[in-house]
Length: 330
Ligand code: HPA
Ligand code: ZN
Image (cartoon, rainbow, N blue to C red; front, side, top):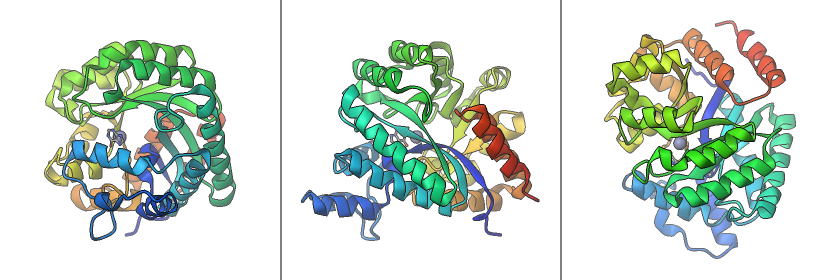
């Protein structure tokens, strides 16, 4: 069965990481930037491992230089996601890449992204919310500046604050101040943890950053007491199975713990992370999970309901999206 038409909620994407390669190639050409080294023969992005991925990601992002570029990016990303049946999407947006953490420049980027999102909501029926994101390997001082951008623009379209980047760089606790700032601004919180580091990283995220959701978090499976804590604290995991397999966190989907985590009672959701980088989209994720674990449309409906419950959005939006999910006859 094709899962294309099933309405979906996706909580974990990086806006630049969702950039169609052709958009990046077109921008590189317009700006006379040579990015030929980051593309493979098949036209997709090329890199060796996660750390090289981060470098290629930043190289691709280097041609996104203005609010107009981000408007084009937002439009292209939302069109692709809507084609895959996504009706509600959250994306990580980094003031680092949008104006170098300058509040005034950031406002201009954000306005352009929001305009493009409003247009896509009208034209393609997809709702976007932004999660402002610090980049871990840029360090705690940069994260505070990012949190300042978050404080200045929290509310409405911007509903969350998070952190991505290199999990091997620094500690979650180094970023507690930035997360405190974001929490005080009323933002909901998530951080990448338990993808490249083990369960202790997830504990650190809960203890020091007091997040409600965890990006990935899959390595919690190695610690049964932590599993109990995730359930007790009502933490939702933003699981990205295709990303984990593509980057080699697990050698194949059969080894991936998403089904075990779900069976133990952890709230799991499914996202694509950086879809063209991992040669995936939400339809492929669902088809692969269905083939591997026997999940059917009713299972995916339940996952999507869990996702909208954990979404960083206002209650009107939550109720509207939930109704669409519930109306599906699965
Ligand atoms: N993981 C961590 N950091 C990132 C990613 C990712 O997939 N994409 C962009 N920054
Ligand atoms: Zn991610």
